[in-house]
Length: 304
Ligand SMILES: Nc1ncnc2c1ncn2[C@@H]1O[C@H](COP(=O)(O)OP(=O)(O)OP(=O)(O)O)[C@@H](O)[C@H]1O
Ligand code: NI
Image (cartoon, rainbow, N blue to C red):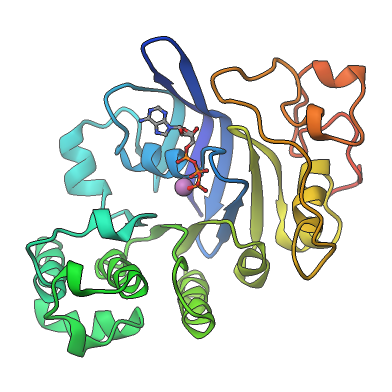
């Protein structure tokens, strides 16, 4: 069963003298039981994608295309529907910046109890929900400013899991966590999928994605350039950008990708990776399409 479906999803921000093309023509499908990892360098549009799905973009954003969760239209539902029926009920979000997501004047226990009550769940389960997310219930009476970065991270994870949404979007959920807690969080996400939920995991951490993902979408300069089963992506990357990302890993070749991603205010008409790509030639001036968006993929026989 498909839980999340996007077709031609695009997001642009209109600035006074420029347009930021943050997400371009995204076709995604996440099925119940699936953990999809979205990976890519800083600024490629991952968090904007998450915010677009939850209706959390600022007023200068223009969204086009289609997106549904569990059959419900996400882009043409009003704020009331998004607030009452989507956020928390159908889609949970572990936000990228826990500190800004937490309300300074409420303790963890109050925040958690309010969330549980708002979704007709027993507020007395707050301790268990916190513990499941790796947050010590003994610390629930602290205010957000009394939490370390890693503790705040675990608290927002508990808040997102409290309502048990079918789709969870986790935006860099392991930031600031020590290795055992990273593993704890990843196992938690994996378990949700094994129990029939779906997770869209946004991460810089390719090792994390390799550990738990069923499918991987590699994003570059606002587009998904490779979207395939995880095993294929990690063992036989097809897009030169994916191959370069893997080579940059410390336990692989530790070779950084030369150059920089393009400005999202001035994207080229053809392949945006071409200026950094060892395989680029004149054909790359036209836009590549397909599950591996490249005119010269490293592998052509890829399972999609
Ligand atoms: N409100 C906004 N107005 C204009 N540009 C924006 C706005 N929000 C985000 N952007 C731009 O959209 C692009 C994508 O941002 P996004 O936060 O999605 O990146 P990301 O892939 O999540 O990066 P990171 O890995 O660092 O979190 C960036 O260039 C960012 O500057
Ligand atoms: Ni982000």
